[in-house]
Length: 287
Image 1 (tube, rainbow, N blue to C red):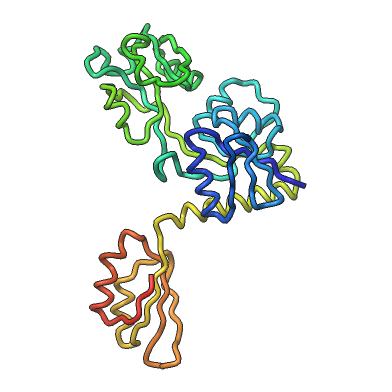
Image 2 (tube, rainbow, N blue to C red; image 1 turned 120 degrees about the vertical axis):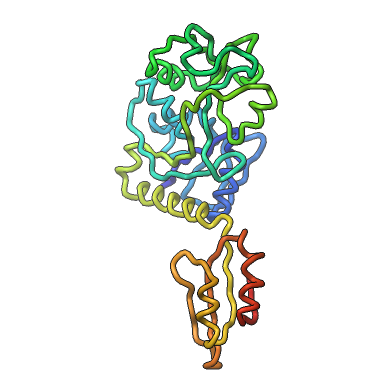
């Protein structure tokens, strides 16, 4: 038996494959194939655009897949799903960072539009059509929402009055002289599965194990292990300096006057921490 798993093609593809690699899976993508090879014989991977992932998971073409909350919401607002889908894991990573993506409403800096209500009767270009319509409907503002095939930032003011576009840093919007008026929604990657797969004990276990490994890989990002030998008389001073997820592990050495200390710390704190523990009486630090 194999689990059919959708890998998002496009902007999330590289970061997703890197995440799987940190989780212990090697996925090889050929430029000529939409079926990547993977070093797990129980997995069958397929490259699918994130925008379509929820539909293929719902229809049972895939047992599970990775896509954003944005495209899940867009799919659900369509109201045509044959089956339900479940979010198994909330995975906060994106194309450029380990953070959430914002879908923002933006208009030209020199335009008269200062707030969403100012866009009554205006044309909005976006890939996220249903979510954008729902956003304006909730405000009671009538707009014309047009689907954009891409390069959405260049459309105002000639082809649209404003846009709803995904951004991590806002730099592309600023480069195109667009001002953010509001955040329509925040999104991050989800591992989703269909109801049929989750009722199968083997598939459910496999999906949950993948979720566990991916979450662990994200949590480990930016953290390093630190090992050092410390005199027992200096142990209290060293422990006061060491942050840890729980508590450092302390082990006895062959010399009763010394102990080994192992802990996990944020990588960015290493350069400040090591000189401090050295001054406090450590010996033999290994990062």
